[in-house]
Length: 183
Image (tube, rainbow, N blue to C red; front, side, top):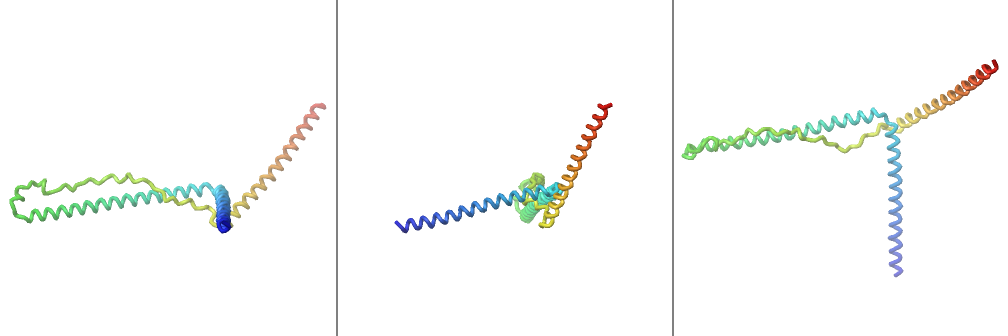
C-alpha cells in the first residue's frame, strides 16, 4: 500500500511538471504571438502588398507548370497511342489474307484524333508559407522604434506649443473684449 502511494505521488509529480511546462509553453506562445503582431503592425503596408504580389506570381507559375506537365503527359499518351496504332496497322497490312480484304478501313484504323482537353481548370494553389517578417534583424526594429519615439516627442512638443498659442489667443480675445467694453 505504501509503495502504491509512493508511485502515485511520483506520477502526480510528473503530471504537475508536464502541466507546468504546458502552461509555460502556452504563455511563451501567447507572448510570441503578441510580439509578431507588434512587429507586423510596425511593418510598412507596401511590404505586405509586395509579398502578396510575389506570392500570386509564384502561384501562377506553379499553375502554369502543372498545366504544361498535364499537356506533355497528354501528348505523350497520344503519341504512344499513335505508335501502337501504326504498329497494329503494319501487322495487319503485312498479312496477305482474306480477312484483310474483308475488313473495312474503319475497323483497321482507330481514331486517334482526340482533342486536347481544357487544362485551364487547374486552380491556383498556395504553398502555405507565411509572409516573412519585414524586419530581418533587431537593429532594423530598434531603428523603427527609435524613429517612432522621436516622432512622438515632436508631436508632444507641437501640442504644448499649440496649447500655449491657444492660451495666448484666448488671452488676447479677453483683452480685446475688455478694451472694447471700456470704450
